[in-house]
Figure 1: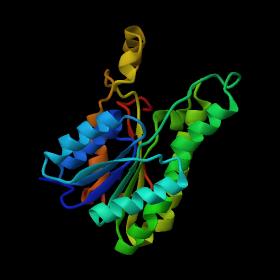
Figure 2: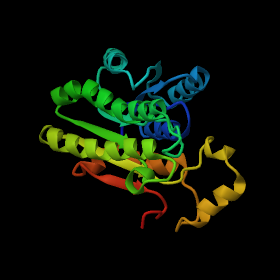
Figure 3: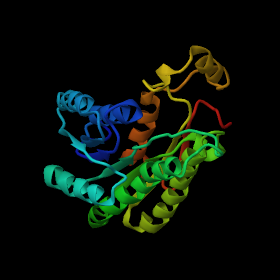
Figure 4: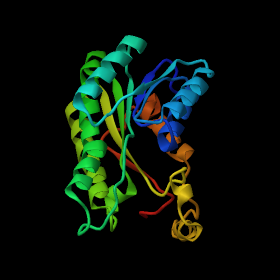
Length: 248
């Protein structure tokens, strides 16, 4: 059963990692997928081709979600190319980790801009379309770090905690128009970024997780499929922790 048949989704930052996993799962469930990338044009093209073999329409757009005008243009382009936007997944994000005493103002500003302001930019851009349609599902990617904090990540934690508050407010504002806004808070997810970490560090992390393993992009994507689909028609303003029990 294809849960997203006939729906169109925008996913930001989807050329690799969690975003790529979400794009693949959405396409497998019948959604048309418009996704953005910042610099990895080659990976984006490979993903676009791969998704198009699944019998849906997929297109990659180079766009910076942290830029207000680029976000507006992206949404206009997607509407021209696809005709509708039913689902928005705000997944674009960066880290610039450092202890507060060593963190520069630029490291703080950049992370807030890419991780948090992008959510404002993209929701602002799709809002009019979703209001007109009187339906829509918005999924914002936070993090376990946005809920419990983490030393060396004050900027990242602040941006991801901000997403939760922003998302709840959007749920309250847009609920009467059948537009839902939810948050997914991943724990330790194993992607090409974590593959570069020291094996002992990774083992220590896995051992501290009740389910004794790191998550996969598919683990996150499956929850996003639920939130994007009509199965979650009565779920809004929620933060779903997909962390193997880290915060239990």
